[in-house]
Length: 495
Image (cartoon, rainbow, N blue to C red; front, side, top):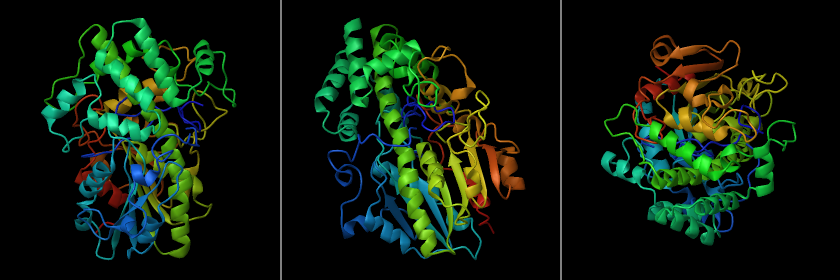
């Protein structure tokens, strides 16, 4: 099923790190509903790869400047680390801010995001509010060539982004993301390093990516021909990027990279040279898209099977606790899919704020504009939030504006890979779509006049979410006091 708001989502990824792909993003300074069992945590054990050690040390407090602060740590199956769960349950607070990072994250980057984003809150809330802070840590992957505003030196980030070969840190991260696939990853790295000028080399690269994803070639070919079909009669659940001719895909991705210059930055646009180097830049982006495809599915699993049940249990034990969900990038998908596990009539979820959300802008729609027989993957679930569901978006986000729709398009679709089709739009690029009665506000108006008491609302945050280099643009530029004030306003926690 395509990520046009239907359950599943193709994953978009290429935005690399940016964006959107299948997954992940961290943010700021940083689907198929079931996981595949691949990735961090499969084979090598989640805690060894990403999470904290087992036992008492798992509940150690990371270096975050607000208090009380704890982290909830999940593996790829959505299982929570028991020590972190117990630590969160002990937080003494009236209101709990629960923030899930996005795709371009390792553990260190995620913690830095939480530290930066949470910093303004103590000075924004009213005297009767005792805040508790929770960082949701789930298995994502950090591509070190993806610049994050305020985290990476601009010159170093620009140099890394323009490099085709895999740097050692990214190679190591891929080994943890796909454990037991060292032979395939070694060959992928060798091809990107050597950049052979032959169609056969690109065909081999495409086959290796499909092997890492466990995408069946016959299914991919059927999807390319438009002869396959999903169980619901829609497009096959094979993104076009992994089904079409690999040279065509690499050319498309190389062109998209060349067009994804920085937003609000003095850094030069990323424009790979003509010839085989440009095509291999596209091939590297295809690999990045593959990780996003996995991550997108993973985010839904962690939200529905992990975070949602944990918060429901916490609410049963502490019914007076007010929970405010925040998510960046694929972390927005995590917190949104947590709504699936909330029981009908539950009142513990008081607000939901999505920062550059990397999932379909039709997710909360009752009927898809292009297929009135179907609704979005989260249709109607905004009613499980006692307060507003706020979607902050920015046109300066290249990851979501360029790469998300490109990588979400299903094989068999009649339009070209770069053809415009709003079916594949992301909520963090243009806000919520096809939700009747959902207002659309500027950031300034939302801060000046306030937010609705309940229901969906889109807030154009482009006046502050505007910095960032290629290929993701402003996707990770979310650490701003203005956005913290949006969260406070959504939760009715202000002075």
